[in-house]
Image (tube, rainbow, N blue to C red):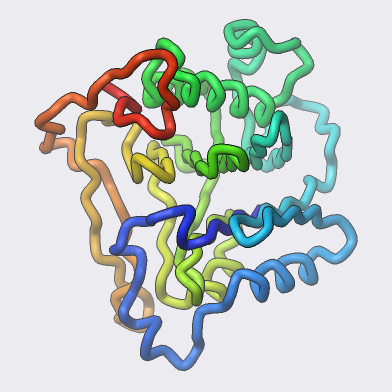
Length: 262
């Protein structure tokens, strides 16, 4: 999978941008180059959708779209509902119960569920974001793009069975992919693994849903050549947020409020 978001849409952690990329012989690529390379690497079955100059989403269906078991780790799903789009990787063990909880039909898949969970958060549902993600039992990684609100919501499960990477392209755009080769070719030194047990929202930034009151701590990342690359991030469980994020009325948009968790 591949997700690219314009610099004006997302403000990633500044530690992702490595100074080594500025002096490297291999320069980061522009988003259109990355999309072109991704499609060419899967010429027969890649789905690509562009949202003007704001975002691009690319998806390659799994080779076996109808696995004999629902519990498969290499599952990849794409879904679009009401101008919200989700690329989901992995599987959820409690999908049936969550579908009931969110009022979805029993045939709804994980990508549909994540969109509905995002919609609930966006429209100020009763649960904080970290609790919603903690309720997902399984191995997962996903990216949601809300085209109407211009918002991004991404998360990666804590069990490390699904991997995502993110980095900075030549024009400052943010790239998220499960393909390390794509990330390296596109971002050069300015990339890192997406931290497990964490979520990223374009307004609220990077947070841990495993340890929702802990601050995120950047850790220098050294590659095989001894060069400092984009930083890794982990929750500093010894630290605690000193102030609670304010709650607001139900009419406020979750993406624009400060109340992603309390």
